[in-house]
Image (cartoon, rainbow, N blue to C red):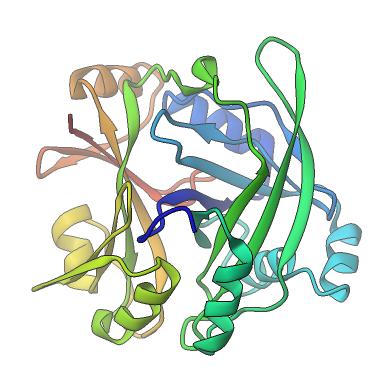
Length: 295
């Protein structure tokens, strides 16, 4: 395996329209990679960071192909379709960990009764800013908790890794240099300690008054009560659903004044709380985006 615990690799953000997500993320100050099509009916336009984490806004390129993929047992597409049916076409559906051995992760998930289904191997082309094209290959091992139908996770092994030199895609006008942590909500954080212990490969987990902090190899996952979401992110969330829901992403920025100036210039509404800038979810931006000066 790549490490124990695993690092965070990327986050899946369903969107109704890839072009709309590109526009929204551009206004937020992010550099967005060229559109890329999956071989099973979905498409993305990713945002990469120097810390090797990326955002994956995910659209539906062909509903017919997606339905056929679900019928063939494609867990990735099935989960995306279920999220859109149950929640919305806009949102934050999955967190993804990096691994060097997805087969071993799948075996661990099955041994602990948390496998979400069959593994998936696929490849897709990626167009670089200089016009060149490379083929990226992936192997995915899926995990889920039946108590949380609107959240899942998987381990992603890069069989044919993305180019190491993605400098042009990793520079962002808003000053963001990486991701510090993400926030997941549930009224019962302690109930999901075991799930995160297994899926992240033995991370350090710290309890606090608002829930848990799971320390992956390169960033944190905050598992927060609704009160914690209000306290840290000023985001009201319903307390009726006891399952996990991914809610927010905290970005590291070099200079918060650069971030605020860019958002203001582009007409993006934001608030401030606890030395952070908060941009609430919007079409093309399925999670709350928080920005903080973090070295």
